Length: 198
Image (cartoon, rainbow, N blue to C red):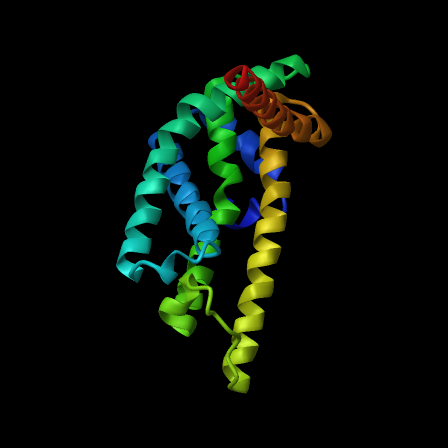
């Protein structure tokens, strides 16, 4: 099953997906992946200090939905473009497929985040969050934290391998392919800042 084998054989799973081509399930994987990534990020921003849990969840949903077209029509073409500089052969749909399958580890964090919320409640989104004092709750809290770290770190490895499969090049080039757009963005921001200060 791809949901499990992607963890161990990300390149092979992505290659099989590329052979099948772009389908409706790709969009749903990207939506779920972006929602999981947004939820993980927002859980650390302490939005719950000033807003209700309902507001935080609604903000996560809206941010995730906004990020989907950005992923499909800006990020994917950008990774295709930078990848082509490095000898990559993937087209934009290939990158979208790789992005979708590379997001599966992040989707797996959703049950862990739900378990976090069941354990911590609204404090999950607050700066006042403290570790539980009850031994069993503390053990579960530490286990969930370790699990999230492993999922996020290994998720990066899976994502890079998926991009490498789409472009038919090495993981090292996949890393450069993902880093270059960030440098370009930084240079653009610096340039705009300098121009605005003139």
